[in-house]
Image (cartoon, rainbow, N blue to C red; front, side, top):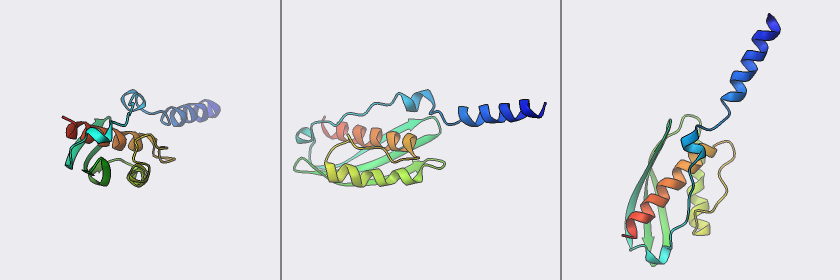
Length: 120
């Protein structure tokens, strides 16, 4: 009986390591920055228990600043460091923050949405 309880607890712990399907399915592409108008653009991504709202400032085809205006994340707060990677590489094709994959993907998708808004 004790072994059964231990196995069930282990199964629950391992199952909780998976990302929810809506987060796991997030794909991010870098829009053509030369087509993004100068200004500050906002983007939002809501997925499962993770939500992000960002303001992205673009000047002359370059991402100059990214401000995370809202990030509901549980334990994914360290994912906020991803904005420095995006600015440095001028791309959304950056590595996610280890241990905060879900939050990293949601923040990147919000940035993509902001840049798409500026491309209209």
